[in-house]
Image (cartoon, rainbow, N blue to C red; front, top):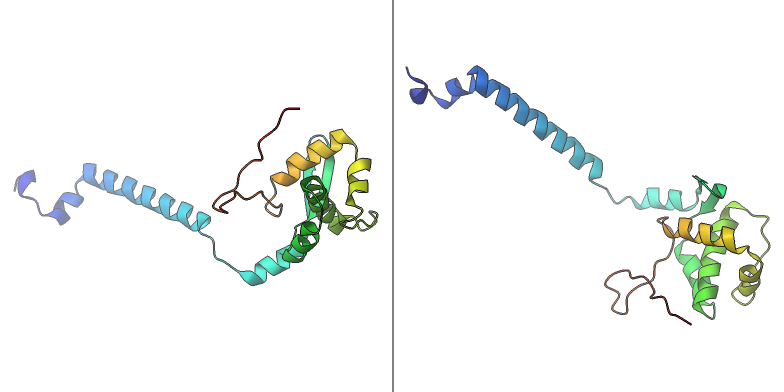
Length: 155
């Protein structure tokens, strides 16, 4: 029987084809493993548990940063702030307050004091860091379709 007349089962057993089949199986298994690692399952119980956790991260300039994630109730407090600078300061303050309970108390009416007393170098590093965290509020576009950066304005 010539190679052209082999059944598909017999052709699969040829050494050159066995190696190809093994390579394809290996690739398929790797793909499956990647897909399983990426796939997420929405778990509201886990979300609620995570919301109360204090997260820690080592920062190259600031050292160990401890913070909590913002929750829906925090957005009500943040929305009471008069302007964007106060809302940003309140977001940062609330995340830090969850981990550092000895921070002074600030309200939407007094959050500008927090803004005025926080050193600029540390504040800018902290803002960059917290903006990258999943619990930080992002600025929505006017349509609400995607997140946008606020354009810089020159003075």
